[in-house]
Image (cartoon, rainbow, N blue to C red; front, side):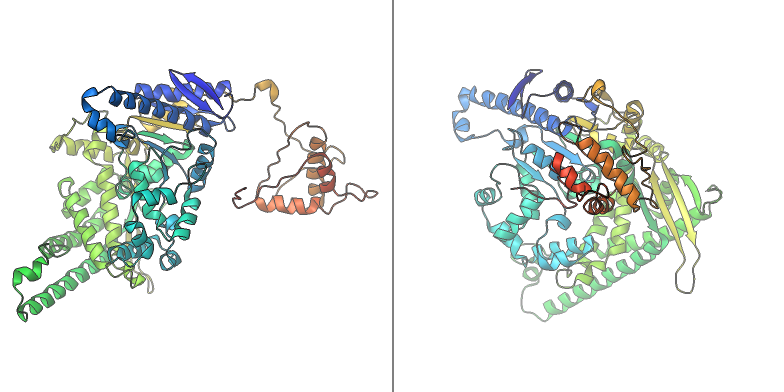
Length: 623
């Protein structure tokens, strides 16, 4: 273990860092110290993940030490000091480390466990798809069904995994889920959960509350809806986007959404069903109370707690009227002659703010969007309340849920914060400004979207529908909205961000620094070449689909690898286009002899020079 001092921060590194790693860590610490955002490009193989972890966690450790010293110097608070064994997590910035997939996050965990910082409080956020261990729930393929079943079983306390989690004290849970020698990844959490019959999904959520480092996929933090579900608090936080070369498209997708007139019609039916069911339940309750000697107030209060209806029927009736109106306004929008017809492409294109007018004409506005979203949520929960017993119940409210998500995406994307951010204006702290100017700015944001509408005629087997696509064409809206949640520093990094100037402009953040790092290997140590023929028999190395199963191609590749293995003093790394091609060629290497007079195969000859290791398709954990 090597310790290097960077900008006054002692960084412990598993080995003596290369110059490119020192430069990279310097940029990371500078951005965090100065509270600005940075975009860092560092080629694959330069230890980017390790450098990120060590530099950010070293800075956090220094801040922790400074805060502990501050507490120790407060002589008048002896009683506080005596009870303070560690710095409360709320006093320090939380680090959110985002990557594209959970498999990439598993690699981050492995890198973290190589460092001296593996004892830091860490959790990996995942969905029920990754973390649920209940047999009945796991069998379901639809994520919506899983979520509804889980919530139903938890509320009725019929999930023994959750019940065991809920009844365990924090000390016991910490002991059970602590991995010897490091941080657990999702697979480790599942193993421990199954062994002890404790829910790993809710345990990960619990760990998030006190975690100093949270590992999570991109969309959990970019998508405002998912951010709310997973209770991601960004105030004062440090957000890292690793493997960020496709961050722009993720940001655009998060604030893009699709809905159809058929979905509206089915949502109307679902809402009618909810209103009718609730009316029947309330009528039954009135009849029971009329025939009961129990006092009315006792019946509706139940131990002093109001049992009010899950939603107000009068409010649902207003929503129903709005849906009928929306159905009409969608058709009117499609028939609007202002729509642009594209050559060879069906449908019409409008500026994004045209959808706002459609919504406003139907009765949905910025002022009322939140109320409609909350009402829709209550109706959906009511319709799906029996999902734990009947998974088919999850289909009830499916279209209302799609409508809710549609409204949520549109109005979260075009919120006053996003509207002001896209025009480079600042929203005053604690401001609740609602004015025509804010709405005008929101419509200006709408111009960064396109409304694409397609009409499909009905057939005997398929009903007619008009599909509404609301597409975002800038990543700046999602990123600036994210930044406005009080984020201290955003670090965007990847092996390839080029052209960096275009990337930083498109992201829409005011980057305080950027880096285009050099590779650890120097130019005179690298030879890049295209080899067209094998070195001995001059076989053409044509790996096209029609040629790759030809034994001449297999012999040519084998000759080339063998020539390198017999010449290069250390390791040789050979890549193939796919696992299928790799396994096919290996099978031929083990059969084909190097010449007619020899009994040795190409594979046996390779093994004379090198120990051969073949990458498995599935992850393998070495002991």
